[in-house]
Length: 231
Ligand code: SF4
Ligand code: SF4
View 1: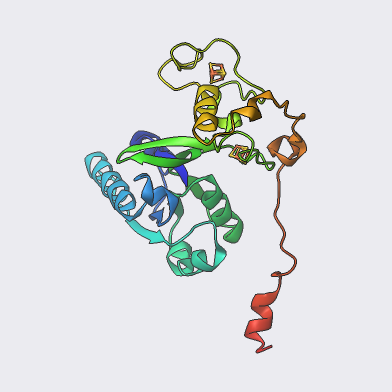
View 2: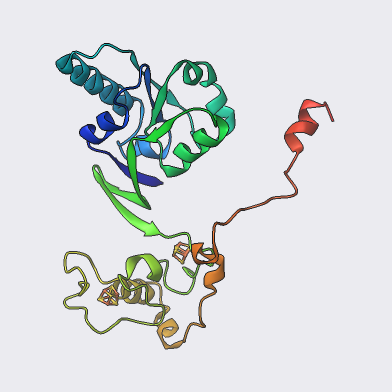
């Protein structure tokens, strides 16, 4: 999932200062799971903005809603009327959702209510950890299912830096050394021999280093139109 943290309320309040009708929109997918930007957080944010307005003697409308997936136009359009009525939208989606809403409704002011952090997993209730940087050329099959790009603080591809101590990373001793994790996992699955193999240079052109990426599936492009046309 994509994780995020809600921006401080004062920051959001400053963004929407002077606007008439404020609409706070949550996203029902990743940011709901990480308890940052779902319906509950949208309602809380709207209520907090209203309280702030009351303290300052400001009278305006502050409403909230929740969209299934803000990164998908189909779901954004379900809120088109509410968005049209608002003077400003605070999106509690990840940065993808915020940008997509601004693209789909180009004349609408859309501000981010979250700081998007990373792609990760739920380790336990209230704890999420980064697991993937979307490098575009996955090597998990070579590293025991532990990502060296993400879980090694230096993103080393061919073994540890030599600075780890007691299985902890020298960059941040509060986290495990990614290469220790790789070693332990390879040992567990009987593939320690992989550590003797030198990985070739990685093709970083497939990562964000090669510029913004797009994924195209020509086989499904336009199939919506075909279905609508009864083909
Ligand atoms: S190797 Fe790349 S795609 Fe695979 S988990 Fe790591 S960052 Fe993600
Ligand atoms: S101690 Fe381990 S995780 Fe930290 S930078 Fe070195 S190899 Fe990477």
